Length: 140
Image 1 (cartoon, one colour):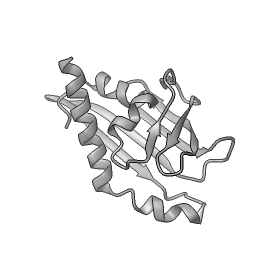
Image 2 (cartoon, one colour):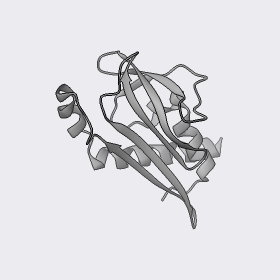
Image 3 (cartoon, helix red, strand yellow):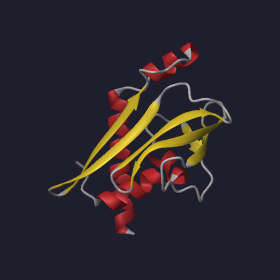
Image 4 (cartoon, helix red, strand yellow):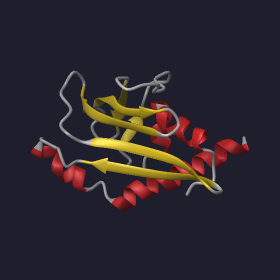
């Protein structure tokens, strides 16, 4: 549970320029501002920390303030089969945040080692960083 309003949390997730601030996988270096996700089919780009490569992320699930999920791919490429998903719901005292990384459909064997390194602990750490960030933003 994150002690913050669902809308405030969702705004941080749906704004790619803010994602490197809370990504506990330390995989995201930067994103251009002005890419706020608003619908299924939106595409946003991110620069990766290790390689500096740019990834396109196609939004495949979206419900403003409640659900967002995307498939990353190389620019102009076909997604290799992994999905990042965030689900938010109201609970007493704040928001329940569920963050999942599904790589069960991954087709690129070169990405499996990296996919396996995205553990439940890292997903939980992203939620913790997100909570700290939304609380800091609320105090401003």
